[in-house]
Image (cartoon, rainbow, N blue to C red; front, side):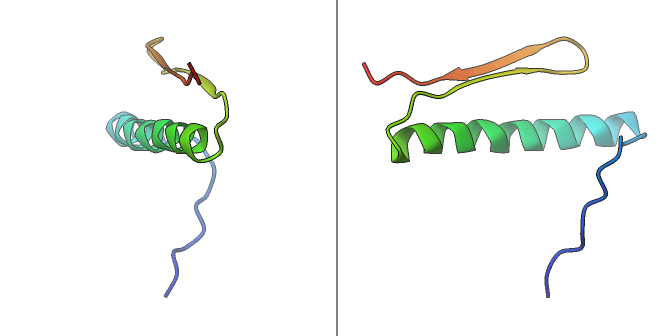
Length: 62
């Protein structure tokens, strides 16, 4: 049994939107880290929340 298709539209409930953002942000940061390690790649990720908060990740081979 697979998951249903996610409808890509704005989440109207503010709390649900924030929870989804936090979970997806953490997943995206983890993927960026994994890509930098597994592929020996230079990766930079800059992410701004709706409130203007900055989240960043950068890898360095040095």
